[in-house]
Image 1 (cartoon, helix red, strand yellow):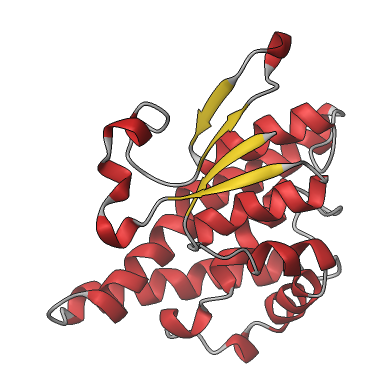
Image 2 (image 1 turned 90 degrees about the horizontal axis):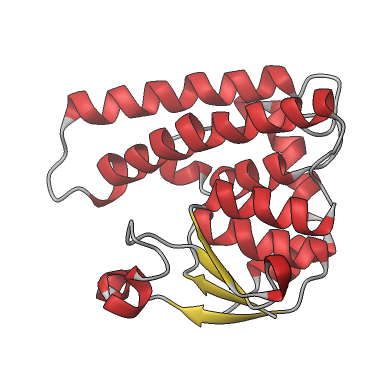
Length: 205
């Protein structure tokens, strides 16, 4: 059994998608980030950076419980644990890892800043909004180019796709016309159609 500490954000969806795709048994512990649950001492012992998601695998290495925080680290851990969606061949693994890191270092943080300044900031700051919208468009173009002629970012469906996909779902928040990126649009629809993904996105908190 895996305990998933979760809220319905793109980063939270990454892990519910992975757990559903990998067929792992899990239970959800809601962490209401709107009410600052992420700062509670019990959660900080699992996720010292006070961010969701985090997991506790009750059947970790050597049969002992292990906690993992940071969505990229969780995806890699689950991929190694199950041998699914994370190749063992080094060349294929590097291809997956570089796109996972692209998401962790760019596509997530930059789109998150776009969300903040475009949608949630109490005052609109034109410079900040323009900066993050422009960077978002650049990153979408990178992804669109990578998807030309292939269905998934590393060839086969992988944990990198599980990391990238949830951020695309909020393209309207990001001032993105998804029709400008036809390969990304088809990719989003392709992943959205997967039964495991549909179950993961339906997780209620």
